[in-house]
Image (cartoon, rainbow, N blue to C red; front, side):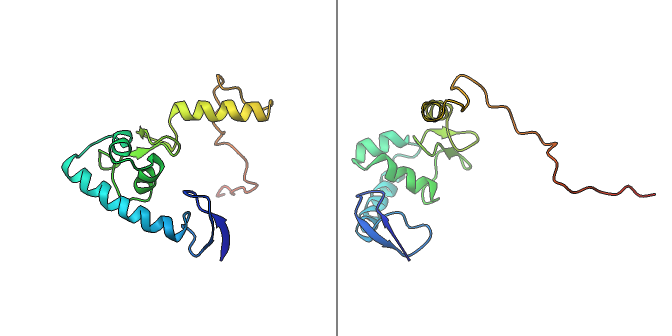
Amino acid sequence: MELRNCERCGKAFIKTSPQQSICPQCEKLEEEEFVTVKEYLQGHPGMPLEKIAETLEIPKQTVLRFIQSGRLEVAGSHAKVCINCGQPLERGTMCPECQALLLKELHSLHPSAPKPDQQVPPKSSQKSTGFHSRRPD
């Protein structure tokens, strides 16, 4: 067991499972909100994340947590969303705008980090593992 702060309300609670990020009181509230969102989506399929949160007055992060946990699906059977803003993605875990913002913040903390306008070069697949194979004679 581990003591941590609830991501939603900030109160301290004892974490009882690895994926638990909110306190038991907020879990109850989120379960009620989940039912509300699910019922709303039955009548409004394909509604964007921002519109759901705004219309139902539920925090965007809560709706995003429902999507990331697999409890709700985004339009498209295999759609992904940005882990920061919830924008639908074709691939990866973060949209280009959030990547640029993160890189800008990183550069402000560590000047030696790549600048926001620089592309990060892909890692070489030729990296030595220290193992070699023998050729058959």
